[in-house]
Amino acid sequence: MGLSGTLAPIVLFCYNRPWHLQQTVESLQRNTLASKSELFVYSDGPKSEHDSPQVRKVREYLSQVTGFHAIHIQEAEKNKGLAASVIDGVSHVLSKYQKVIVLEDDMLSATDFLSFMNEALDVYFDRADIFSVTGYTPPITFPANYPHDLYLVPRASSWGWGTWSHKWSKADWQVKDFPVLKSNADIRLEFNKGGDDLWPMLAKQQQGVIDSWAIRWTYSQFQNKAYGLYPIHSKIRNIGTDGSGTNFTFKSGEYGQEMAEGRVQMPADLVPDEKMVRAFGEYYRLPFLLKVKNRVKYGI
Image (cartoon, rainbow, N blue to C red; front, side, top):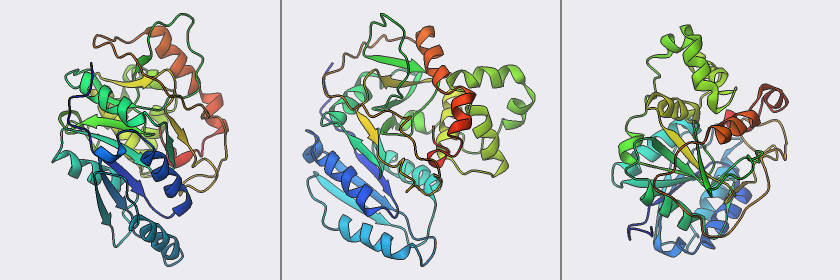
């Protein structure tokens, strides 16, 4: 199935890393669909005067960006933080469009990333059990003889991802039934099929220890018995695991360096494979988490 003819707008969030942002934008510009795509950029405001020079550099760079069908830049006067920025920004764009592609300012993309994302957003638009798609895949050990280019797991990715307005609108950002989850071990065990770190992150979120839109989005996916769609070969590479992120203290190459080009077969009737789900969950087992407990923004 090809593209519908209506491309998803790209939403890009940035803060105070002009070098990372430039690499991200230049990578996007090399995408075959860049010149036909609208770009919405949300530039967060400085937390303090210390951050102001870097934020100014980011905005000076943004004012010179070209290569897209249209560019819309929103500059926050005050710091909102990533969680509020993403929730508000994505919600605003999805109030005007049916689908969206989202990146932060430290994501390199393959030249066919936009093509892959747009096709996936078209093919799986009507699948009630798929809430998100991503161009990233962690370096997991795949089961032998897995027959597809894509797989489904009970976890959303925050690295080069996309969704639809009718699914994003179902997100419960307050996690209203958290007391039920907290008191029910069976539900927590089911939630953790996407990784042993999910419940601890959600608990930290509700306790105010972290502020993550991504763990709440994954939980909303779980509430709706839905999955995240991942490629076998990643089309996204994170360049922010260098200690430059706001909430990051651990430098790691554990996230994978692969970034593959090439057409991906997208069967409309793709179903979850239990071996794939187990292999994916194994990557997020606690021994690994203890080693990288301070990883980027407590992202997923």
